[in-house]
Image 1 (cartoon, rainbow, N blue to C red):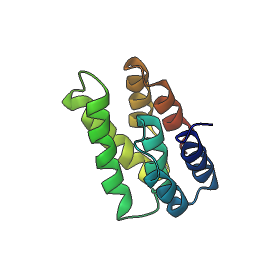
Image 2: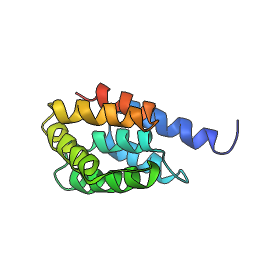
Image 3: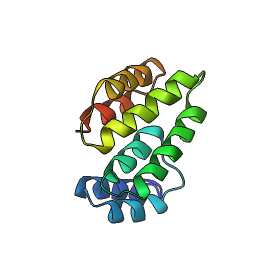
Image 4: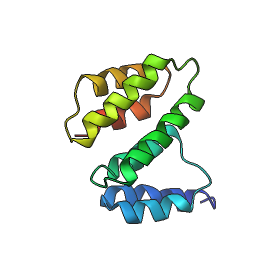
Amino acid sequence: MTSEGRPYSQFQRALRTGNPEIALAAARELRSLDLADALSLVLLLRSDAERYPRGAVRWLERYCRACENVSLRDSRLALDAFIELAEHRPGPASARLAERLRAQGQERAAQRLEQAG
């Protein structure tokens, strides 16, 4: 197992606990997170009124860097989806963002978004 495999496995296990503190600590041990893993981490923060908005904005920044041709509408769609998800009610914006992520080659992120609920 590589030195990166162990921290990443720990991060995946930490996500499965559903405990944001454990997942954040595990994420700090990684060099970076891809878009899907960063999304999973943000989704764990939904009940934290301070961390969730900051995490959502950071994810949006990562999304804009990771995907080509992210438009203002795409950005607004992502923000609308995060508002829906904050209320634990995925809706039309979340579904449209998942579609957009797929079109941009981000299948894992789209799946994570669809699994949020």
